Image (cartoon, rainbow, N blue to C red; front, side, top):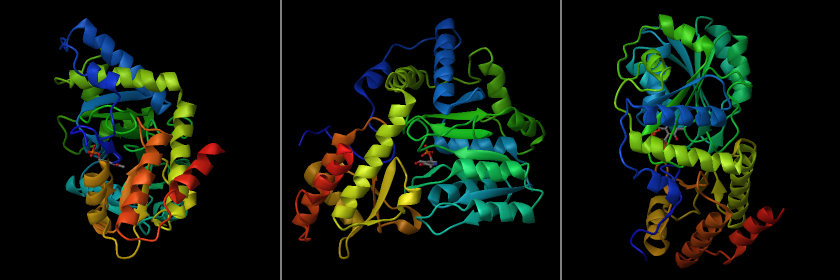
Length: 381
Ligand SMILES: Cc1ncc(COP(=O)(O)O)c(C=O)c1O
């Protein structure tokens, strides 16, 4: 096997197109100069296209968690109540961030593998009319579940609450209409659907959210969004930005623009359907039901007697196929196949073929080619 050749099928960092990688190796530029201002302006406009918004999009030098922390610390005050709808490890993380800032968290929860229930969110908001901010996860990466953000947003709006969306593992892969769905704050990161190395987070902020930010009292410094907005008005960042990543992102955004958002979304939806069909044909379990299945990552339960983590190690060392494991309470119980960003249908064929071969080698009664055949049936439609 080639040392550097991997079939990286984890839900971030995702593979980076070669031209994006080489863009990140361009010479350094002055981050207070015209060249940088042009870069940040272009990238911000490109991001507004992918976010489907006319709102401000703030660029932060951090990972997705930093973007979520920025949302919490800028919108809320210590002691204030906020609702967190969680259906997995990343929803729980938002609740943990909020608690770390002294926020009184009210949680709407479901069994892992299911989507959040807009009715439950509505019930909790009825019971807690003082809640003014609701956090939801668009795509819960730990369980492979996509939430109905449009429905959740309309419940929040009906209760006069702001809606904050963690779109870290969906933006640029699955449709999320920031303005049309009335989403106040949307957070994502560079290393997933946006096909860029890790290190940047992006936060869109509506006018309603800016108003709330004015009165919110949680402490903040590096992630002060109002300060970032002031600098962004002249296309600068308050601090030294990750210039190389922005240079890379500019190319990644132009790749997305050239493919066009509708076909980017269709490619992800098709890969998700195809992988699910292949997994079903192999007789393995799917954690999420068809109705709430993620477009970017599929969580699979292995057959009885197969340890998920040991099987992942086997796939990596034998075929160079790298899958993700379970997180939190799902550790060791599932593996996850990502179909996100710079990936296509043939990548899924390779992943499924490796699964089949691995299962056969482990002595499981799987007919070689059956998963790939089911996958191909979906792709042929
Ligand atoms: C849905 C979701 N939210 C938040 C995060 C955290 O992002 P990061 O690891 O970039 O801090 C991730 C990362 O996988 C994620 O998938």
